[in-house]
Length: 222
Image (cartoon, rainbow, N blue to C red):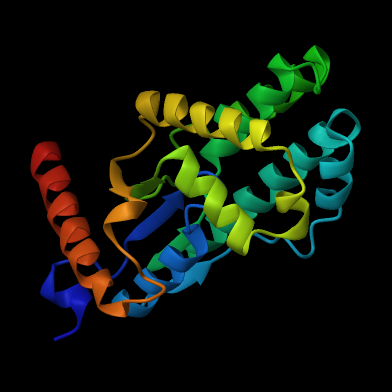
């Protein structure tokens, strides 16, 4: 019996992994997909035409970057549900507006006009009854010290060159965002309580928690 069947996780489930840079979203995505026999959906970083420019000049490129992410994530979300589910998704569409676009607007690196345009487009595309929301969002959380250490060890060059103050602010904004997030059910996992890189068997307790959480959520809805 595979882990998906063992813990009663539906074959058409869509699970999204969220959290700031450095918490191991990609590792968790691959680990869960392998354990459940699901497909993966990864953020397209290498083909993003704005990312390097953005890290060099936030003010000039923040709006372009957010519009690009919104379009790509919307298309990916649509594709996932057209396939009939059975996906683990690396990063959610909700983080873009709740964290990144808002941060740049508040810090003055996105103009009020650009921010209004972006949020209006986001609400028209995503915050409607017709948009397919995930069955579960898994939020990976850890201390800022753990996050910064992981960025230093495994981060991309442009991330390692970013001032620590940026990651500290991002960490706080993520915590504030998840505390008020309600678009779909949320399961929080502390990154200090497992090690998927060095112990592949540590995925099973996580799958067990997911199965229990989904079952409890369905009971509450019924």
